[in-house]
Length: 542
Image (cartoon, rainbow, N blue to C red; front, top):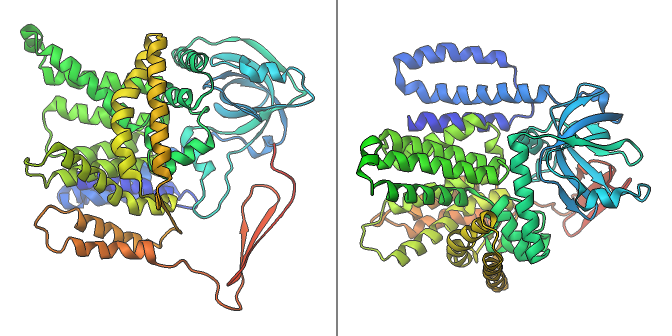
């Protein structure tokens, strides 16, 4: 079962690597494979591999069929829609997701709209200063385009991100077109978004647009708009990015807190335990806590994945059939991919599950005599070492200061700041917000000190696949339980990923790369000793 679950997730991941969707007729080959797996269960992982590939292809085909028609690109269209997300405001304007209710042509159900500041429209300042709210119904003149990203090596795949988010078109409001507020929609999702907006605005009103206010809003309601690029750079350099927004760690901790509280109270009542075992009550509480926090985060895709994972673990606790942590983790991964086949596109999925798997792997070698501080230090070192190959592959960098920064930041953010922020969101309290902000400011000072340490961040090129494979084998060997022979020698398998030089032009050669910049032209010319960039064309804009 464990291998089959992992194979299903692998099949969905392989589909995401295809340049185009394969014809679905090939799935007929799964029929004889299913018959063979019925007689020979050893073939079940191969059937699961094909099923994951087929399932991801079917859902991608269905979602892409709803994208904007090419014939509607570049045309002005009048659209009636409802603001379906928290608007994100910056110096250029505001951006929000719009649920389309009616239009003069068939449009996708959800589009991503940008409302740029315009010197020609005097009412822009009012619109962009906060007059666009979740749940509002607007009549707008939009110019739309199909989802499109830039195809550059190791770059962000914007088109895949739009596909994952269920967005079928992007566009912008025409400054001289129709812009009229028609009313409001009152659905459960709109109530949640309005509640998130109210909490966010209350935080900013009490603390101002400070770094602490931005981080607290990100932790409480998942809104990251007030976190500056410089602060994200600080978090990347110290390896604590996963802590500064609603992540899998926070959802898991909140669900665990709900489970612990309900389980502890449930055990105090013999009547309740007779009707329902405390273990099952705690499992239900874990699901309820994870769902509540996920909704508070706007049901964002990363939080959804963690909710699915918590639900699988809670179901295993409910059934009482937990065979091993690895099996539960594999089933959780398969469940996440089943409900969200685009999850393998997100680095956070692999980093989250990889970190949990590393913790299980390291803890399997504990004898029970280690001090808890020693265990905590080993876990931090194992996660840093174990995720280093993935970090090089995904981000071309590894935070050397990460273990120190996380050793301090994880308990402060997860066990103190986040609970205080959630309490302040539910119970309007100025002292709670002030205390949370003070703790965040102290933590930022510590992170700045960590980032200033010599060698705090290792940056390099992305290693070749064979070097990553060797590094993963080296990690498994180095973190093996005590008594495994020559564990230190395993570090030699990590060396190629860090030391193998990137390919470069030889004397007399010139490598020319045309970059995908969306519009205009950018050409990169590399020789043995020079790098030249030629850029031409119009400036980026709508």
